[in-house]
Image 1 (cartoon, rainbow, N blue to C red):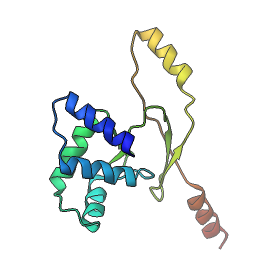
Image 2: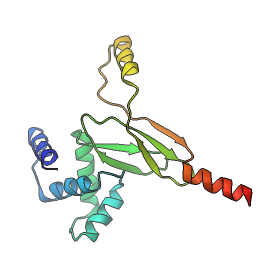
Image 3: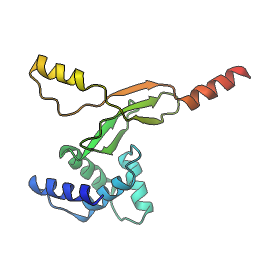
Image 4: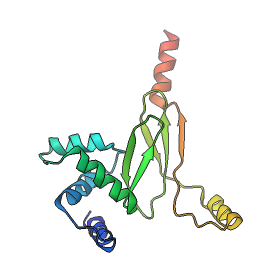
Amino acid sequence: MEEFLQKARQLLAQRGYKWTGPRRDIIHALLRESYQHISAEELHALMQKQGYEIGLATVYRTLELLVETGLVHKLQFGDGCSRYELAEEDHHHHHLVCARCGKIYEVAMDLLEELEHKIELDHDFAISGHHLQFYGTCSACKKQMREKRDE
């Protein structure tokens, strides 16, 4: 946690941004919630519940700044809601999105390295990252559908 905070502080300073209390608090909250993909509204509500006095506009602006600096990824899962997760340098993963319940699962393997290398060579393009999402039906929803069908 402290390592990421130090990195964030340095990166913001390098880009001419101040290290403010709200920015620190939002990064702390993201670190505590790093196991999920959280929307700005969910993060704001969570922070309010934990006693932080912070406005929703500040949460939005800070998240966009953190995306711009590469500290946070902004994700779209096809439901019209942007979600955010910390950008971990050595942790590539993909997402499974259930079309029925909306639950998002992380797939911790990255099998695209060979494809990335070929694209870089074929197109003289330096890839800095990627996001991949698979849409389908999760096991819980499939089970529920089978049970309903068998009734």
